[in-house]
Amino acid sequence: MLHHAISALTNILRPDLDLSKSRLETLCMIVIGMVSARSVNLGHLACERPGSALTSSTYRRLQRFFQHVHLDEDWSLPLLVRLLGLNKSWLLALDRTNWQIGKTEVNFLVLAVVTRRFRVPLVWSLIEGRGCSDTDMRIALMERYLANFPATTIRLLLADREFVGAGWMEFLSKNNIPFAIRVRGNLRITTEDGHDLTLRARLRLARRGRAFRARLGTREDAAASNTPLLNVAAKPLKGEWLIVVTNVAPRTALETYRKRWAIECLFGDAKTRGLNLEDTRLTDPRKLALLMSLVALALAWAGRAAADLLGKRAPPRKSHGHYARSWFRTGFDHIRSRLRSDPLDAIASWQRINPEARKPCGVV
Image (cartoon, rainbow, N blue to C red; front, side, top):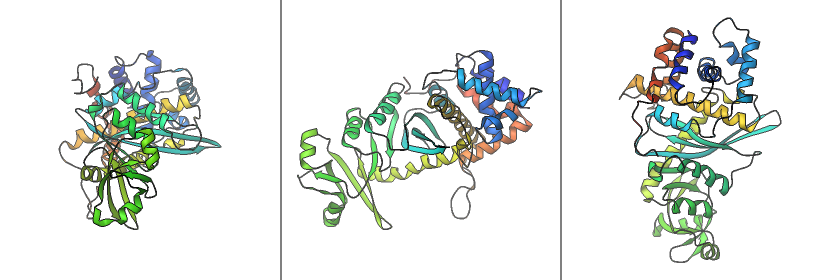
């Protein structure tokens, strides 16, 4: 059954990828195999190959694919956007995911699209070691995005407390990128009227409101670097404050920020709830980046399959109000079932990337 799916997907992707017939078939075999096997481990994928070829031969073929195939770092981005059917503008979320392979640290910085139905990585980079990203890394990642899309496609960029910094936010403001970034209560700010204090101290002055304007850093830092004047919005949580720095309306930022959690769910989809990304034994940064591209295609495929299956409906909910199965698991389980009974139906969603398909609005 999988042979028909691989052949059909190869024909669909042939106009978009400059690969030999054998390499393209291997790429399609990996994407389909990782969904079918629920793993990215090459040993498991080798067992998914249809036909009479030896598993050891298939395993070596997969190894050669990652060894010899060199694609542009953002080669999958046009395919992802067309497969998802994105248009006009969307939410972006920025975060890291990391794990260990032996003594090697794998640390991805990921910029993902977040919609009601989809949570899919768009661009990413690998960070050396287990530390956080710096401003230059974040700017480089965002510049890669802006090389493919105008800033008007970003409805709002969401990020957690790790992704702060005056230089980073200045870059976003200068490029007209709307953002809502959570910050810590001990961050020093300079208020619009010139007071230099921490956010936590400012929020103790409840009578002055929980939405105000300020610059990041001390009064001297703000004057020296000419940091932008930003909106600060806060609301109390259990035992702490949710504080968001933004260049849009404070209420909009607070209401939208809760959707940042979708990127955490995305990492769960890529790992234990779906493709088990941590099963890989690849450690070379180039090979890992290529693997993430294939994982992104598989995640987008599952989301698209769920959207096509349910149409305007949403997945059923349990008594507590949450989905019985997420959009991802709805599509993922549907694909796995159809690959075994009707493989051509399983890959029907890929027809959206056909060259004759309408180009999404706003894509440059």
